[in-house]
Image: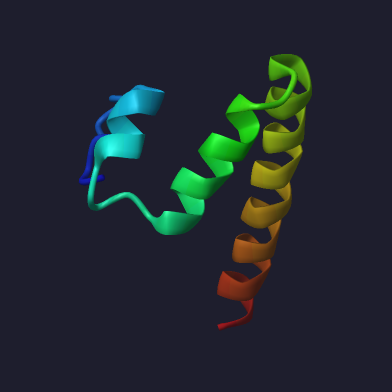
Length: 63
């Protein structure tokens, strides 16, 4: 997926799904979310992002 997110460019869903550099996990999560209610999927993804960021910050602060 390159450096797009770091430069402020957010690729579209189709772009991510077609990107060979995008992780299998991300593509699977996107495909799963597309079959759900979009509000529920967006809310759940925000919680997931916050939890993973908190875990990352905690791990990095321990090193």
